[in-house]
Every structure is written in structure tokens, then in C-alpha cells.
Image (cartoon, rainbow, N blue to C red; front, side):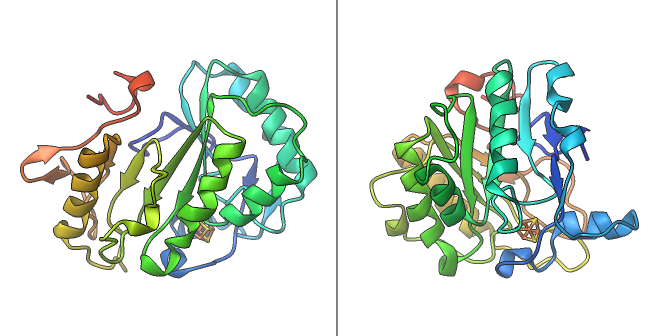
Length: 244
Ligand code: SF4
């Protein structure tokens, strides 16, 4: 859970916090919760200060921060988030990716200046959106443009069509990832929903990463119209998943 990962769009996961609670429909079959229970562990929010320095020893890579939690969960004190931020600031050899379903707390944290440095450009801030009900998270994320160099969206598990994309306004993200839901209780996605996102990204010059279509045990190459879509931001060329 901390170290090398099979998650297609990054190289490592780093979990200075584990555990979370459900906030919206995308959480119903939470992978992190299922994995915790499989190992007989609690899914209560738990801080792991002993893991704060873990990424110092790793080769430079893309690090998914808190794959087993949500860094902006209401039970994680701002003081601890600051420790995580300082650790990322110290390790500029990496690219850190923070993904939240609680962008309003992320914006609150930075808006209230709990973090006392200029935000480092090697830290990317993302919001996760699964259906139209939660597209407002993108508008909240846009506030991070005031503080951060890069923002991104994870549209996964995609539960319905998100077109038209008027909810993205004019302030489009720097990267979009999408995929369907997997596992025994997966909710079937329609390939058309992914194609709509791909076409929007192509039209707006946004790198587009299609992770997988979903299903019981998705495997093999994830294709849309016979083609893989594993684009990543230009600065990462050749790093994530053999991207274009
Ligand atoms: S926010 Fe993420 S980690 Fe937390 S319950 Fe939902 S899916 Fe799981």
C-alpha cells in the first residue's frame, strides 16, 4: 500500500494516512475499503507519521498520495496535512498527485494559509467525479489555480455520461483520467461515455488517459475505437504507462 503500485497512471502509492468514509455514489464499492477489510484492517481514518519520510528513498517517479484514503477528509487535521506538504516540498525529484472527493476542504486549507510556502509545481491537485451530480467539484477545484501550477480530474468510476461539458467552464484541467468500475459489484459503463470525454479532451488539447472500461476483472489493453489512450502531461513523456 506504500511503494510500487499497479495503478496504471502512477509509479508509487504513498499512504501517510489510511481509512476514509463514504461521501458520494462513487464510493459505494470503494477499493481502498475492500482492500483494508481483506487484510483484516480497520477503515477508520488513521494517521501514519512514521510513513512521512518514505518517499525520500524512492527513485524519481509519479506518486499517488493517499490511494487508501482522502488527504482532505474532515478527520485529518490541517497540521498533519502541512507535514505531508512539507515532505513533498522537500522531495522535488518526484511528482506527487493528490486526488480528493473533498475539494472544498482542499481549497479551505490553502485559502486559510495553513501551508506557509509557495506551492511546489511538482505537486498536482485533482478532484474525482463519477456522475453529473458531483460535477461541481470541478468548479471548486478551479480555485486551486490560485495556489497550484497543475490541476487534474479523475472521472472514475464513471457512472453516467458527463456530456455536455459545460460544467468545466473555460478553465479546463491539465490532465483527465477516466475508467469504469471494476470488481464483483461493478456498475456497467457505456463506451460512449468515455468517447465523449476523449473527444472533449482532443478538442481542448488536454492529455487523456483511459484506464480501463470496467467489469468484473478488466484486463488486457483498454481500447476506444481500436486505440489505446494513455496520454499524460507533456513534461512526463515516456514516464507514465509508456504514454505518447
Ligand atoms: S473518498 Fe475515496 S477512499 Fe474515501 S470512501 Fe470514497 S472512494 Fe473510498
